[in-house]
Picture: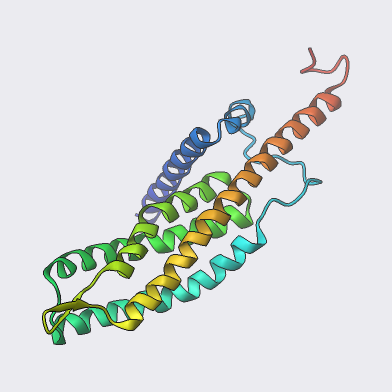
Length: 215
């Protein structure tokens, strides 16, 4: 049973990685030559004397975003329950906010995980997944909690001060990560393509005249 579950997890992880690789190949066509030309048994390019492509500002943003996401998500959920039980809440907010917050809770850990793995290990598919999840759905959800007016006081819709201030900070994190993540992704793609061409040049040089694999 354990081996079967492990095999299912491995297949699921491979399917996710394959899907992200396909998406990154569509976004950055220059990666297709690298993917098509690599040998099936060679998953990593072995050259190491190139510039590190990991982005330090993005990594710092991810670290602080993890801490703030835990704080924001916990407090927003607590305030949502408080408003539902003790305050007059607009019908639209009552219907939309639990759905959007549930989506945010499901996507955010996966998004941050992809960001950490993609940036630190220089994996373009995972970093692509992080960037796409940042754009959709996290950015629109953060914006919703800024503009939403959940409470009705004396016939006027309003919002608690923390709701708007906390969501503005979250939106700022998400928007900056979208910009910095795209810049890091472009740099990493260039680095991967450069490593591939350097690896191929080194392999062609090692083959030499008269050795197998030379033309």
